Length: 343
Image 1: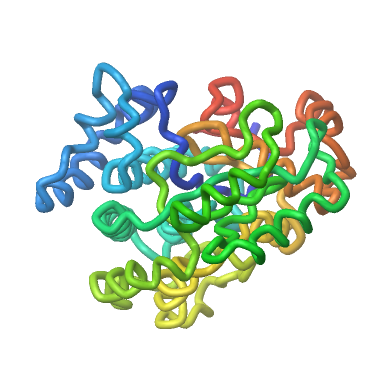
Image 2: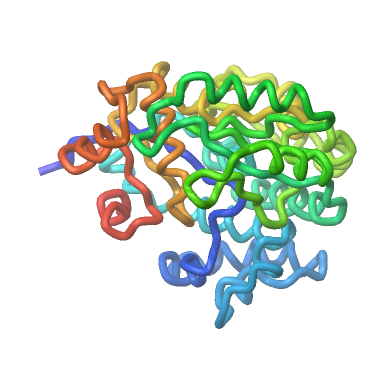
């Protein structure tokens, strides 16, 4: 008996998801796709960079090495893209793809606007540019409570803080959190004015630059110079960007897609929440599949669902109950959910 297909929105993660727990992720889950890794490593060899095979096969995880933009970006892309290829197409009809921050580059490859090698070229080039010209940093702070309900006035308070501190920007709208970015003085000022909550926030993100802010206009220019529009083609699957805009198959202006990817996407706020909500509203998927590595994007995705009350969700408790009964989110970074996704 054939399987009943479910429709799926696929979400690719950004930086910061390959940590000590993920060490060996590619080799563990994708031993049959080591040729894919070899192709990516051929590109890295041309830049005299440490191979992904060596990084993923390391005996121990070190923050200084694995969170570098020129290492983290390529490693995460390789794991995410291989996960995408592993999705059981007899069980799932992928109706759209999106991603968080760097995950937009992965989504371009998953959606078919770039092939796998071109996607890696984009990710590795931009990650290297970021590392070579590391500008500013990021911190993260929530505006929801422990049950993922919005705290009245908290979001507005954070936005007012951004307006009040020179050179502080909203980098990413990430579910029930805002990622703020700026130079060191701006970040320190924000940290001094934000009360410590949950014993962890405000939280600095290690080795992250001031992504998605005007501070990276130089990186944007370098990216456009290094990566021409000729890399891009028409997507095969609809792609949702960091504004919530949908790029449709056979109807995408290539030059405009290229310009957004290395222009506005680099220098303006990335609204992951809007991307997820657009995916839910426009494509009404049965499930959302989160590519690995890591599991940290699950909370932000669920919080986006709660914000738009998708499936009647209004709180973390609602989400947990629904996940136990009939999951809305399947995370490939979690072994118990991964088995329900792969062929």
